Amino acid sequence: MGATLSPENLQTLNRLAIEVPSWAYGNSGTRFKVYSTAGTPRDPFEKIADAAEVHRLTGLAPSVALHIPWDKVEDFTALRTHAENLGVRLGTINSNTFQDDDYKFGALTHEDPKIRRKAIDHHLECIDVMDATGSQDLKIWLAEGSNYPGQADMRGRQDRLADSLAEIYARLTGEQRLVLEYKFFEPAFYHTDVPDWGTSYAQVAALGERAMVCLDTGHHAPGTNIEFIVMQLLRLGKLGSFDFNSRFYADDDLIVGSADPYQLFRIMAEVIRGGGLEEQSTISFMLDQCHNVENKIQGQIRSVLNVQEMTARALLIDRVALTEAQISGDVLAANEIFMNAFYTDVRSELEAWRAERGLPADPMAAFRSSDYQNRIEAERVGGVQAGWGA
Ligand code: LRH
Ligand code: MN
Ligand code: MN
Image 1 (cartoon, protein in one colour):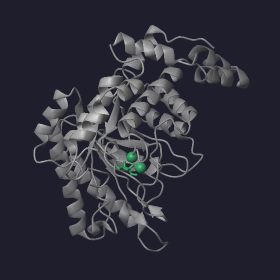
Image 2 (tube, rainbow, N blue to C red):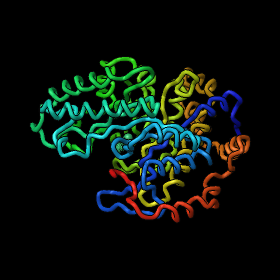
Image 3 (cartoon, rainbow, N blue to C red):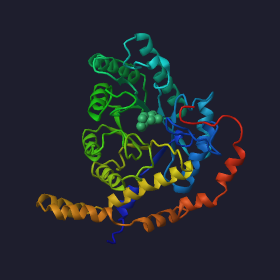
Image 4 (cartoon, rainbow, N blue to C red):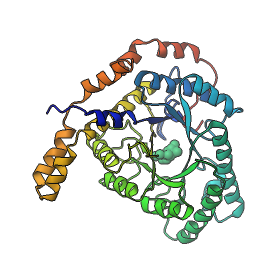
């Protein structure tokens, strides 16, 4: 089927910006083994240089998310200037309350007020970082929960979570937002304190307008209709951000669009339907991925291209014909209209989109034929390679 993107569709597509995570460039692995690779960044400055390369070749990734303390530096203003000199910005600040012995039984939900205080103070420190970096979003993902029925007072934990979040939220200023990420299990296996969009929604709704839900595509039970959740959160005005990645089994953090491009298409179709790519939309599209066995920079290039490609296909849905088929109850016509868009190859149109912007027609090939990888492998010797958790 040969459909082309209309000028309005191209305008919408131009608004798509994808934030890349600093941790995608560091070493990562499973609990069995973290592989170290030549050229891996040794500090946050080098991670940002790699991220800037992704943006330079794709024109799609103008900002980089940081994780505190993994990306803690003496001078965040210097890091901001470094990013801006390379043509990117510092984006979402991710807090971390999952690598400290004190948080074994919880952080923002802990029974002990001293531990809760420490966890709240960490988030206040993250907001100080946001003030220096100019970041808009504080992203909170909590590794809190319990492993055995009876182990924890789930209700008390929910109440303490609300109090802790209220204190963090009160410290935000200006355009700053709090986004609360949910995940159905892991590291806790019986109950998780923020397991689903409903809990995240209930908690952020109690805080106020600048508190939103973060939807990580890998954080759902198999078979979950994620696009329904996207639709509902958009309808409620509470979809703050995405963490994109792919999963086959659990929280695999694989390249977005690699396991199930059709799911990514369906998600982007609901984003477009709900106004998530319109001028006034504030949704932040982020990747949350690790590249354990593949080249990390190319893994990120592939990811942002996948998001753009499925967005372009979703823009091709003939909305007028679809609505007609839906209203008249023509089930198979409606499905065919939807599938026709999904099956349309938009790759040459996206090549043209890049050519117009002076970008390489094939960013993957451009990276492979550049000397960037050789250069970082030669330069980045010695020191400790940064990684997930380092
Ligand atoms: C948790 C998570 C969360 C963290 C990231 C490192 O599973 O997806 O977003 O910040 O991993
Ligand atoms: Mn995530
Ligand atoms: Mn995750």
